Image (tube, rainbow, N blue to C red; front, side, top):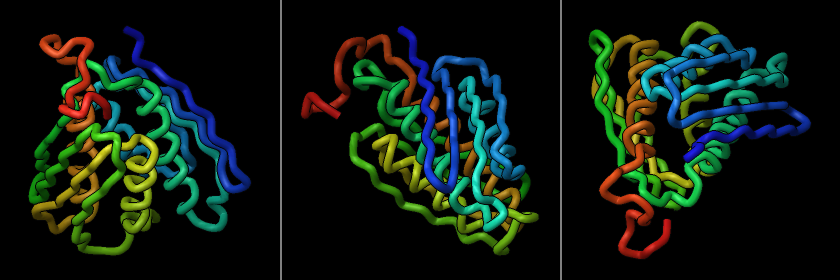
Length: 196
């Protein structure tokens, strides 16, 4: 089964192309114009073992908001297309990831219903030139278009870079777990409703 997708999304503010292979090996090619976002997308690809290409141009002369949000939206669209009808998937995924003093937990459900619980008490407002508020915008965009329920909790941490990086690593691993194909559930929807 080929679980790949390519999505191009163009607006007056951004032009984004995302290609993903859910059954990849972690290869990535990333160029969003926002270096810290590229670093975080690299975590998703490597720790989720997704082959991921992201190209984006946007109005970063204003700020990074539209680019970061629209990359999240387009990635969500690509994951939704690649996962297909959701038959035979594990559905739920979770991961705890530490990085030095920081520890984060991410739990994901391919529920068909967008929802996010987000709790990251960042210790500073900026990571280099990256506004930490954009982390929520990225994940909200993803959730709304991948149609998943996502819980993100940074349990501890004093270094904002470590806080953010543990979240993206844990997200990659939780997404991998949830999207894996379960050989015992082949061809069935993992829901008593019969649909997701």
